[in-house]
Image 1 (cartoon, rainbow, N blue to C red):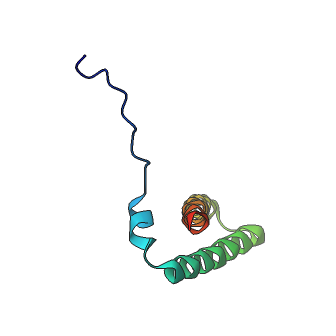
Image 2: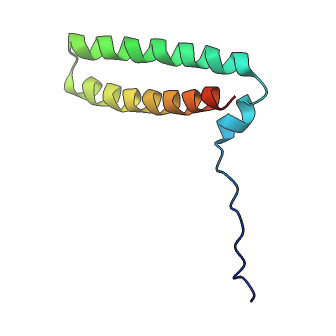
Length: 78
């Protein structure tokens, strides 16, 4: 019947993933920069900062961690 056929859904790809498919060197470079930023934020958090800075640094750390997961996913697919 209409609309009851089983169709394969295309795999979800991030915009960044589509952009970096052709440039494997760029992926490694971004991974390196992301790792450096994560280590820098972690060291600032360990040293202790004001509560406002602590909260914003924590959010920034989570964002970088998410970016790192996406980049490693892209690097492992190739």
